[in-house]
Image (cartoon, rainbow, N blue to C red; front, side, top):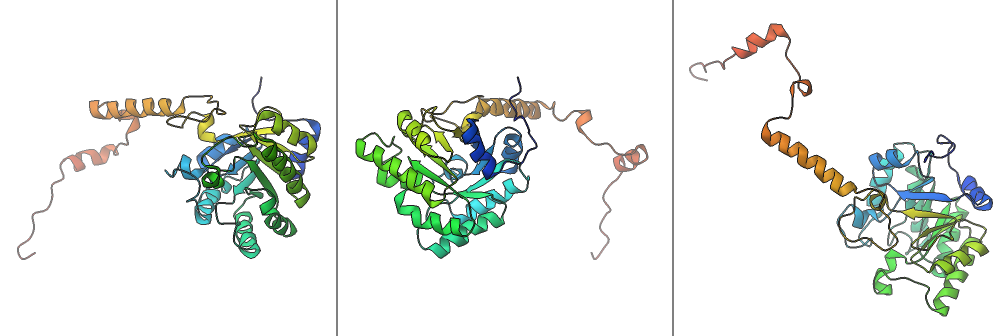
Length: 293
């Protein structure tokens, strides 16, 4: 059975993603931070996110807060150069949509100018003005509710959200209001499965779950988590489908051993001089310096 889309060359668009919600066709979304990951993922997934998770996945930060607009631009441009058929979304990092409508529009518009099809931003009722401002400028917005990593300090860590009646009802209300504000889809992260399923039921727009159970319209995981490139403990909701970290270390170790043993490179991995030059090169000696030089 094929694991690629039925139409791997079909360009994924926002209306198509919304149509899939109506048809019950589940949506697969992953991250890419460079051209290599984008080329691997693009024939398979429906949505590629250039996420601010690049901060802790690739750049060595403890969380996403240090990620800047210029960092997202750098990684977005690398992914966009592959001209993906998947819908390409850029994350709006911390402080890129918190100060003014004008700055929010400028930052988001810059992402679209660099090849993104849409942007994603975190937050609920407190971000409605910014969502409306972007939608008014024809900038498509994906919302993000639940465990929002940019709010890690307010939440006191990466903790499951929506476990009290107050928090659960607030999330459902925020989801409804984000849809009304014009979001074309919502990421639901780190919330109980029943709450995510209810949000998906009441919304017309697709929901993309991460640690939110099976009841969402689709699922997103970080590319490095899916292929097992993450070193160390991963969240409960991660399922690795390969041990990429170990496989890559083993390959590198075999290569380093061959280097030290003198078995790499072999003849077929080396270039050769034309026969007419071999003897000349073998007999070449440096010229003696002339006096006064």
